Amino acid sequence: MHQAVREDRLWFQKHPAAMVRFRNAVPGEFMPLDAIGEHPPFFRPSISGANAPLHWVAVVDLMRLAGETDADQAEPTARLRLRIPAIRSKQRRQKAQEELLEAVAAELLNHLDHAPMTAAA
Image 1 (cartoon, rainbow, N blue to C red):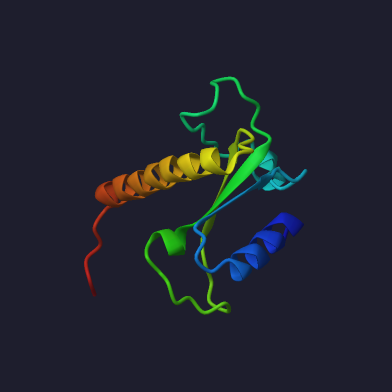
Image 2 (cartoon, one colour):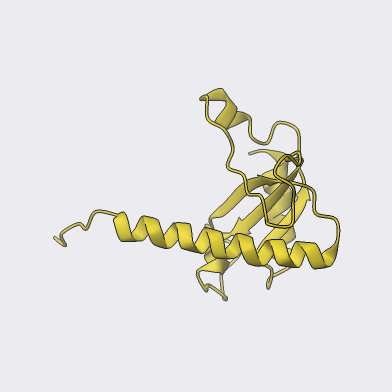
């Protein structure tokens, strides 16, 4: 497990109400994707320029986004890491968080709408 993943886990344990963590990207954290020829997902909030470098990471706790409020720290969770431009101001991070959570929720709902239904046994 990459050190950035461990640090994100600890950060979310210390911030039980948070759904998103913004931080600097850590070298090598996206190497598993690079190794298979994939590019890490990214998000550009409306407050950033189209060519702004993607040097930060937004970590979204998908379980909290889905409404899980009483998660046991030993239980597995799902987090999404996206490359983003640096967002230094607290107000701008709040705006970016709102846009990001809306976009992630819409994407998840879109996938659910198009997921094949399986018959119960």
